[in-house]
Amino acid sequence: MTLEKDMRCPYCGFVDSKVIDSRELDEKVRRRRQCLKCEARFTTYESVVERSLFVIKKDGRREEFSREKLARGIGKACEKRPLPTGAVDSVADEIERELYGLGKAEVSTVTIGDMVMERLKRLDHIAYIRFASVYREFADIGSLKQAVDDLMIGEKPRLVGTGQLPLIPPPAAAAAPARRLRRRAKRH
Ligand SMILES: [Zn+2]
Image 1 (cartoon, protein in one colour):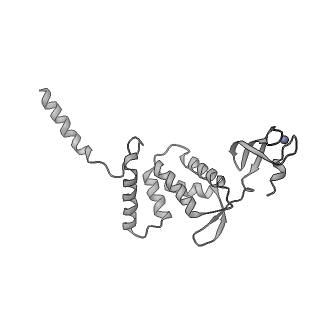
Image 2 (image 1 turned 90 degrees about the vertical axis):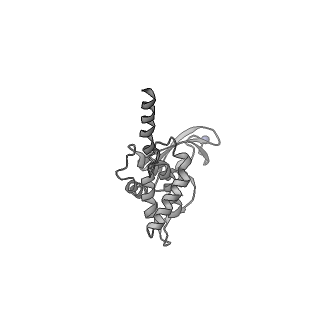
Image 3 (image 1 turned 180 degrees about the vertical axis):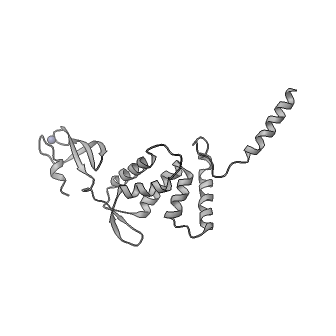
């Protein structure tokens, strides 16, 4: 790596430092570092491009990781879903950070896909199913149904309070008017 020279302590020239804070700015990462020798603090601007990370695709081909491409894929799954502004970008940012945090030179598309699925599952069930249908390459309606069933089973306890509308409305909605009628009858 060519970065090491730039990350030397500007006060004593020592090569090793620890990261105190890390912030992403456009194509750079700003890091607050502390020298492990003299303990002085300094800031480095590291280029994302130089921290190269390769993605191994299913067919074995390698390609440089692209945050833009990741965000596009997530964005497509989230199209027209009522999500807060910036939700897609923050998912992409989170995954990018986690990927670089792994400290590996290569990751598989499977790893990235799983990270996206995990987040979309919490964010929006429709987006999750859409993403899964592309990523898992559902061959037929049966495998789509299986994914929805798995989602319903896996998420049942968490549906309470997540603010998400269930994929299939619960039967309780139909029972409600009857209760109201009974109450009114009692009053008279
Ligand atoms: Zn130093």
